[in-house]
Amino acid sequence: MTPNSPIEYWNGLATAADDGQLFLDPAAARHCNNACNDYLSILKENQALAEMQGNVEGMGTFDSGIALARKFSQKAVGGPNSLVDVLQSHIDVVTAMQAVFRKFFHAAEDVDQQNATSIGRKGPR
Image (cartoon, rainbow, N blue to C red; front, side):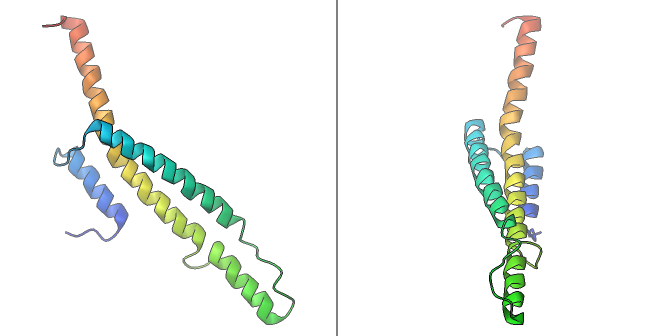
């Protein structure tokens, strides 16, 4: 089955990772996670800037100027396919990507912790 959206795709990869069908080096996963953090910061910063553009003014007092200002405002916030909404969809996808990457280095940390606990109880072999 082909995923219908990028989030479905990444959720499918998360399931594959949980099922042991997808593998990624924990160090590489950590680098990917850090890149996602950097990109999320940029996306959120741009989203905040777009939200400030939600009230465009200065297009004049004619009906056409008022309509144009409203149209530009809605392209930033609240209209169909507004910049704020598009950026949010990107944020959602990058967050789903991060969930997949985190599975690999959290799993490695869990195994390390289990090994350390086992060695602590039984001693080294």
